[in-house]
Image (cartoon, rainbow, N blue to C red; front, side):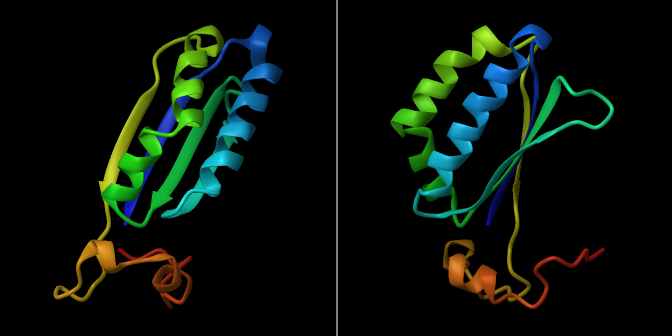
Length: 121
């Protein structure tokens, strides 16, 4: 599974429009094959900082996401809503079974994972 975390500093004067664009982006992205989670969150300490959290079944699914029209449109609209630079991080999560391939960790496997929703250190 691939996890993406991002932060988007948005202009306060265009905040409502930025949130609408992000809501649309999340809605379209959730419909894509391989998308497990795609959510934007408003920061509690700074309402003009929006955090992005995505989960994908595979790197291939994420790469396909980058090629969608809604992703290209969203990237084209970012300069008008941002008040700083976007920061992103990508993480790869592998199942505990070392014989498993990450690409085998599909939506059904994720949904049935007994560790889902638990913090493991």
